[in-house]
Image (cartoon, rainbow, N blue to C red; front, side):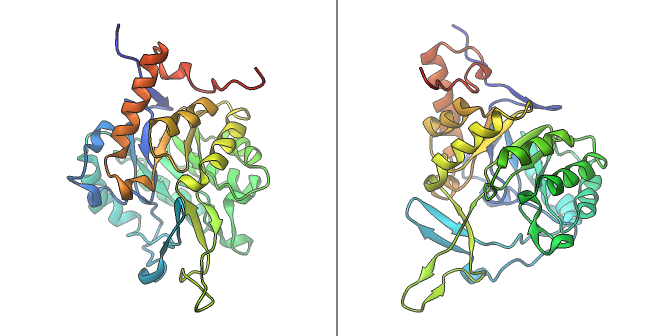
Length: 307
C-alpha cells in the first residue's frame, strides 16, 4: 500500500503536508535553529512585520502562564519590513520549506506597502494579520469588521501576486461573515483563530500581570472554541481554511481537519516541545493509514453531524 498523500495547495503554494507554524511563536525562524527539523513541515509562518520597526510592549511583563494555556501581549515587536527582507528572510529560507511572511499595519496602505515589498521576494505566501488596530477607525481592530477586513485584503491583493492568507480574530460576533468578506476580496485562504481576548490579575497587588493590561489567550484552553469557529468558517467559504488553537498532537490537529481545515498550525506547543510539528505530521499520517485514506482531502470537513 502506498503512503498517504498529505499534500496541500493554497493558491500557487504547494505544501508537502498540512502542518505549519503559527506566526509569532516561531519568531523569524533563527530562534529555533537546531531544535528540530522544521524543513519537514509544510510551511513556516514567521513573526508579523510592519512597515516600520516596532518596540512592542515592555519585555518584563509580556506573557503569563494560565491553566492549559498562556496569555501574551507582545505588541507586534518587529524589525520592520526592510530589515526582515535583508536580515531575517534569508535565514528562514535555509530551512528548505515554504516560508510565509506575516504582515500588519495601521492602515490598508501600510499593508499594501509591505505586500509590495514582498512581491519580488522568495516568500511562498503572505499572511495578513488583521487583528491589529485600524487607526482610521479609532483603534478598532480591522478584523472585527467585515468591510474593514475586506478593504485590507483588497489593498494587499492589488500589491502582490503571492497567495494571501487572511488571519482572523475570534473576538467577533460573526467570524464567518468576516471570512466571506476576506475571500470575496481576494484571499486564497482563511486562517483562524488568533488568540482570544483575556486578562490575568495579580491578586495581592490588584494589578494586571501584563504591562498592556490585557492580552491574547492561546493553548489547549481555546481548542474547542477554535474548532467550532473553523467549522463555521469552512462551511461559509470556498477557499482553504487553516485551523489553529491549542494543537498539541495529531489527534488535536485532526479535530480541526475533520471540522473543515485543509491545514493546521502549531503555536504555543512549540515552547514546550520544539519538535511538536513533526509529531503532529506523524499522527495525521498514522490516522490516514489506519482509516485507509489516500489523500488528506478525504478527511477535510468529514465530521459526522446528526448521524
